[in-house]
Length: 373
Image 1 (tube, one colour):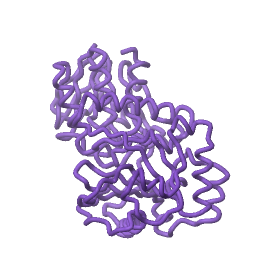
Image 2 (spheres, helix red, strand yellow):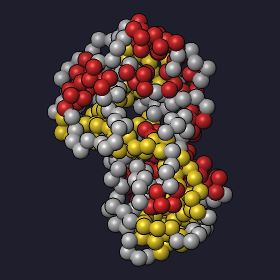
Image 3 (cartoon, helix red, strand yellow):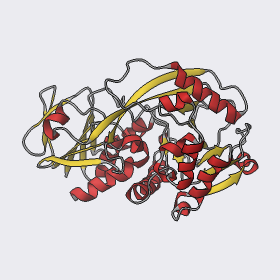
Image 4 (tube, helix red, strand yellow):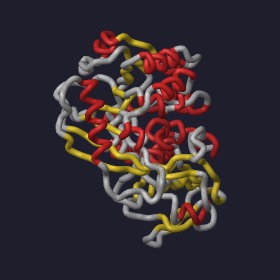
């Protein structure tokens, strides 16, 4: 079988990986020199802890298993089974963490409530003041800026993979074929459009208006910390954002403890991961109203700096990069992804939202199974 994959972000790359793993030939088409969107502009977190139960959690857990397997074969991914800690500072935040540990699926997520001393034994860099911490053993990380490059090298080594850059697919041509802006037609047994947040142009032409929206976020990266941050770190605002924490205790937190005004205005949470070079990737904000701003705002970065420094008990290293990114999210956020046959032999796969890096291996596996690859 020959599979045409359009889009070289993590979702597209994982579809290419699944096809090659199953013995098929892949032609992978990307409009840029390489992926430039949300697949690079994220934390690189394999984030199981906050996922909703049912299909979403099952997808995340399966993806976590697949990531570990791929990481063992592709060291350039930088896969690390580091887990995560969410420090809590008062009884309201602690109540949400205790409710999470009491969930029926807590063991599957690797949840455990740690004292402050136990949390510092797991992550000695957390020298600030907090009362306890929610530990999630199943969380992990990869290197988002280099993951697709490492995967592509491994795919090229198979001899059954062709990568075509600087080619924008303009139209679907009949069945199982697309034409790019060089005038070349690419025909296979299946075509998968993994166009990320690019929802206009070709996507609108072949699929119309789909139940997917675009979301903008701001993030930053620092100079090396100078010591190991041995886990990823979140703050209690993440309880408000991720569906796994929905509970009467979360209702009590929302009613009794308002978010910082800047965090509330920008729909913020803290997530933080250390990169292999020692720097910290820190975010994030959420903007839903179009048109998006073309600039980044400083208030969210100042808020994140205060929160991080309160956990670390030390000044944040110099910020060396700030950026914004846009990802695609199903408007029904309970859906893991929007998967649609748009022509005979042509499928559109988009809208995983902030789950793209986490869930992409399992999303691609499901596509491959459903299409009978």
